[in-house]
Length: 352
Ligand code: NAD
Ligand code: DAU
View 1 (cartoon, rainbow, N blue to C red):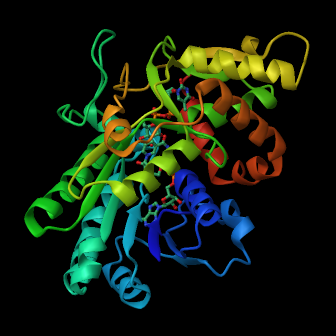
View 2 (cartoon, protein in one colour; view 1 turned 180 degrees about the horizontal axis):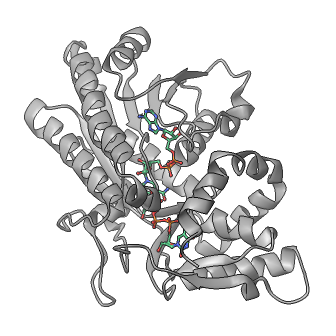
């Protein structure tokens, strides 16, 4: 079996669902259920004995040690993190606690477990750390995309905390020999993404007739990858990646934020016709502090060495995503109550 952390969040839940669709190997899913963790993402597994959910913190070394001894996983896949850049600007503490100290504690427990395994299990064990392209910093318009050799230059409290966690993972391999794998991926979109992030926020606001808040001039560039392609890349790295190595994952889909928002408005104009375009709701607001201008990923290494390529183009993936949100409005309504409303007031209230 495998131990997944953060498996009730956006990418983790998609990973667990895809994993149990594509193989029979059980999953222990450790998640703290922060505002971003949602057990409804896993409703379809309610009666599935291959999925064991454990409510807890990756920073709880005793709990993690107990889970490792009890279930003897062959791998740990670490998705657990605070993941939202804007929240890291308002309050970095949780990001240091989970992304840095939590990863440190998880590595310690993994090492202790791994060191007492028998020879074959020890050789086969993997610690896969899921990270981000944001650790590489910001690119100029003509710069080549990030490779695995691009020096780290994190600019936000979020990316700095992820960079720190990546360095710890690297050190645990080089110093202790722990068979680690690190993946650095670009922006994901797809089902079950919490509507604080660009794509689901814009869909949600457009459907509610609310302003679409574009930061600054909207010309910041991100590379976009459909979430199931990220999940398949992680499975590929887990199966065939070389211990100690880093793999960049991306969709070869560089888009400005304006292009993304225009695409969403145009799809919604077809799916939910109204008088005038949803584009009329676009509203430029004060820019994000320290806003990185451009990210771009060179995913050549994982393609060449492991044969992975994304299946979705941006055009197919974004249509699937809009369709999912339209078909799952009760899910959106459930997650946009309570704490989320408080966030909207705190974050957007003073920007317009
Ligand atoms: P998310 O915020 O949607 O989910 C994070 C999950 O981790 C939640 O279920 C939360 O409850 C859980 N969690 C938080 N702190 C925890 C702790 N201390 N112990 C146990 N569980 C905890 O995040 P996401 O978008 O699914 O991202 C998952 C991972 O992928 C993160 O490490 C993130 O840095 C990385 N990543 C995300 C993207 C993206 O576009 N979303 C891209 C590249 C990499
Ligand atoms: O690049 C990978 C990263 O992508 C992940 O590591 C992070 O966990 C994930 O949150 C994401 O970070 P971003 O900051 O790129 O994603 P976000 O959806 O917050 O913003 C995408 C772009 O859209 C960014 O340039 C800011 C802009 N934006 C965002 C929001 C929420 C807006 O213009 N308006 C908004 O309301």
